Image (cartoon, rainbow, N blue to C red; front, side, top):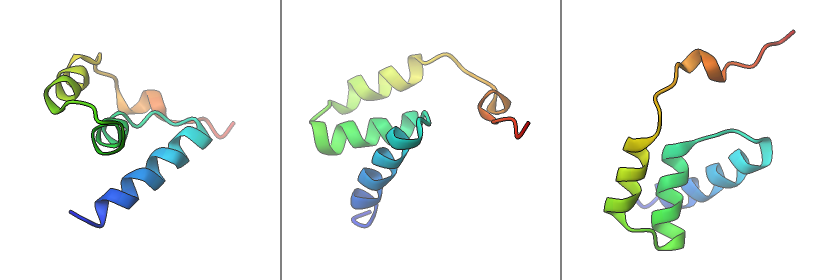
Length: 61
């Protein structure tokens, strides 16, 4: 698990840079680096509307 801590920070920064929504990575980042509560963060994740994976596919067009 320890190697996942810096990876979470790197993934979070990259996602912000390239404007990609990574809700699980963001949630873990908030818990590790911003002091977010575990219960509240999990509830927030579970409350997100479900989406199809295809909605995130970028057209090469």
